[in-house]
Image 1 (tube, rainbow over the protein chains, first blue to last red):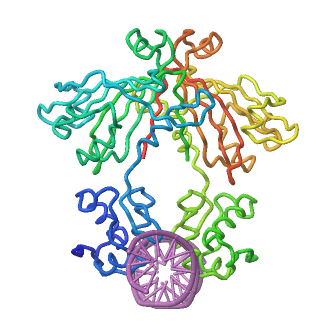
Image 2: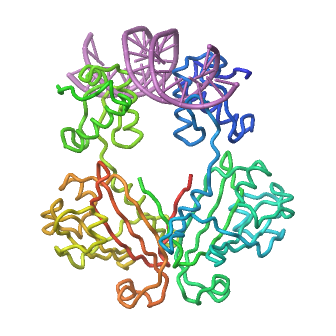
Length: 245
Length: 245
DNA sequence: AAGTGGTCTAGACCACCAT
DNA sequence: TGGTGGTCTAGACCACTTT
């Protein structure tokens, strides 16, 4: 049961776009949350007093945008972006020709609450004198380190994170489930570099060996930045794959 | 005037996808060429004996894929990939954070026709003993080299390329306009490395300096691979930007 | 005025899923 | 069996472009 609303025939904007925006707004307000089924075509059509065809068009737009997914016979659901998948694209694990997509282990080296410096303030769009978490961790495959990460998070949003078992779980599901902060999309910059003394030791390589430096700014709903991280990956294990269309 | 054909109600595949594929095939066969207007919704519906709604759906799929574009009041046209744009999509080199999107110069070092080795044969899906072009060139910004490229092309498809002024123009527009081979999408792999003696000299850096190694397989219509290239870029000038969704 | 695509409707029938 | 989405139809009306 849903209160109909604010679709406007007088508006320039087509009804199906108005509906799409309304649905996105409801997801952003957590009226409909990740993974949840939203009302059926028929219900939406009835609630908003438009035809089913128009509802179909609105939903197809949101499916296209990755906001929803649909299953014949079941319903329409709010999509949860799966970053563990996109993560696994970034690295190749096939170093023995084995195809097993092994889940990387992770070990937190330190977690502290600090006063951020200017670049972090700007990237996370912090105001006043907000503090941030700084997490350093190393990720491993078969117990060999292959990436070290330096992660910054706004303290307020993630208060309580420091008490959690961060070694056991991926971070993005924690953001989503515990802090109601799903990561929707991210901006990444890649640059090649060579390992310094400290990084080389952490990664088990020689200073001067190639490494990939990845900076990522991750956003949640309404394009709010919620995490900034810099990763340094072993060059010999790092392979970034992208399909350009 | 168009001979109707081969849409099959008995087929598992929905009519609108059958139509979309038929249209793509006609474009691939150059029955409808780049930039040309294709028949209107009504004509297509009549020719294929299906409803206008189904035609609309087929066309919207192709618009989504970037194969067609539509203009209200004018018609539906075969899209010509915009190469100044796609170029900047494929290569995102920020010059010291400057925003000037300067067009890089290029200088061909060598072009030869050779018998490809196995990796090239597999990537370009060559049959029998087909030969390939191998082009080596260096790209420059402000007369400074920043990328060296090693490019492989099937000889048959691009016969005559060796006589063209490759220094003056971008390659992809040449593929498109002269050889009716638009590049539709590409697969890229990025990996950090350090410069060897020869590469360092070409790029004006020191051996051991960081470089980015980019391998790209470019495809035309019907997912046919038509170019394979390996690029080595100066690490200090290379910054790859990607939005992960 | 005639032709184009863009939006919207009100159905029909089907395939799939739960019960 | 009833509800869901997926396909398809046959219109209507509108906005835009060209002649």
